[in-house]
Image (cartoon, rainbow over all chains, first blue to last red; front, side, top):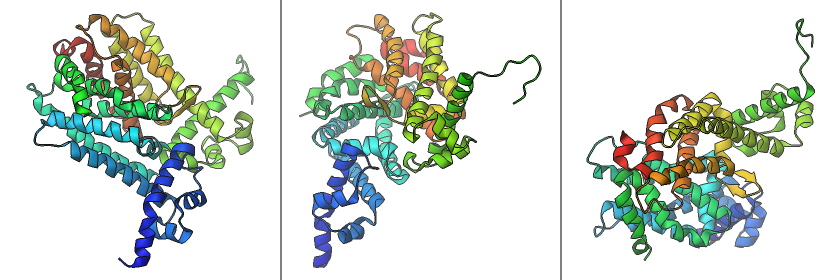
Length: 209
Length: 205
């Protein structure tokens, strides 16, 4: 990598962060590339070289949000935990990420769905499919095949997504981790039944450590 | 317009409402094909088979038409659910009727209902994932299930999460153009909604 490329990469992260913040504050449509350049201290040439155009920058920002999410999910996986605990630990990490960086959550969960170009939402959907597959593995605990509704995992994740979107929009990002017991109960009850779901929800403070 | 003998001319109010609904349906179809920000008044008016000037007689701008469309879609869903709940069936049977009403309405008006479910509600309560009044209606119907739930009962947000989950599944099917497959979801959706209150063996019955 020559010096010029290194210089350009130096402004990549600030530009992506500026895009995420702007989308959260005023939406993708009202986001002005000139403002992003000023905030990140980058030139138009660097912007074009990195992203091509505004849509490319938004795509890169969604990718960053997804990478952060997938990385949290990977960190949640551990040989010391059961598959179920790993899934719930990943959920608690995601909540913490969204609480600390609400612009990441807003970009991935709200703006990619409604305002950004379709390509951005396709990236998000790919990440959502990975999470659904993880949740669906809890079916293995079901001794009677077909007892758990087929749509259970997607409904649970869609519900959690909706709650997070609402809390982010209401400016309550920092309180997201407090919702973990309710989200855990809602996510696992179709798979493990009431009694075990309540136990897992009660134990959730352990996952937040 | 000459009407057949014996028919009364349509009122101005009726015609206005009918035209506004045409715009809402046309907008719902437009956003299935391209992002909202790419929809133009010219394209929308063309799809609604009206002149641009007529569009501006009905709405001040695209945003107003969008808000009307979202409100119209959610009003249809609420009316369908309210009609079922008004029949007075007891829990858990009323959950069955509520799910049937949601699925039936979505299947009958897939584009319009999709518009209401997929786009943020910009009401007094701020940007929310779904229409707060619709969510409240569904959570209210589900809440009766707590009476029969074993103690200590599900956590406080359970009804809301279930309502969000069901609306998410419907919106997802509509987005993929699979409205025809909605009716087949009824049984598992009912099970999904009843089970957190009844426990699995009873919900299966």
